[in-house]
Length: 294
Image 1 (cartoon, rainbow, N blue to C red):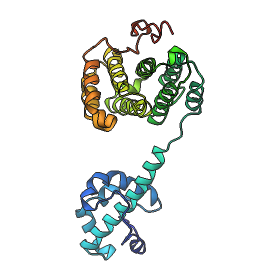
Image 2: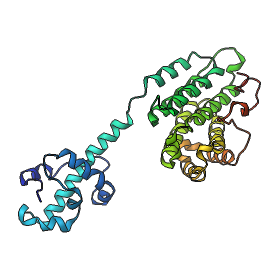
Image 3: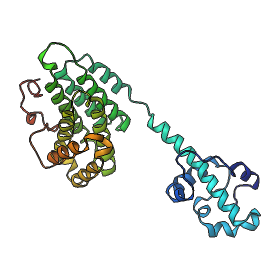
Image 4: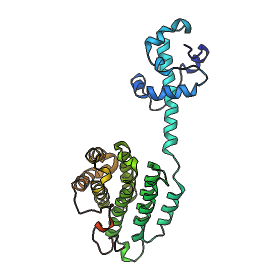
């Protein structure tokens, strides 16, 4: 079996450990991904990841490499550290993924749209994501949730619809209907995807609206939870999703974690005090915030 030529080894020995890699203890966590990356990076070499990861197989070829067990281990960790650096860089690039131009245009338009009509933007863009016209991704959903919440929170003027309690209700309603439309994307039936998308949506909306009033936590979280509870698409994963979202209370809501938990539990329990983003006819009856009357 061929292996990395001996001349490659000095380049990796003493390789600076990238941020986030704490040494041998992290080896198993990153091994599979790192070895896959190494295989791609060193495609010219007849590289066999599974055998490389097992000391007994490496030991078998020691005579060919003329290396000691300790130097093999040192090199292995150095290679893992190098690949981890690439992994971290890839993660940073992924986190900075581009937002679909349609989402950017929609959130920009929301800043000049009547407060009562912003929920329609959420429905239109959410539907586009659901039918795959726009990619279902945290980047797109987070940007949409944040942008629409920011637009509503920033409304000014003497018009009565711009009063604080109406802003809070509209933000909750928008988050609910965005959730309701996203629920029809088949990928949302997977627990991991649903948890990632919904927690990102909640955190983004809260982060953009919390400054106007802590009450937005109750309205946003309760409405999203109630929408999930009433959406058939989530039936098989609802219980597990509720538990996963509950565990994210501090991460999503920070100092308002207890309020988040209370609203989340109430929504999943089927409370009718919030907005249901699955059906406009079930919207909370408020003279100025009900979507039917908007």
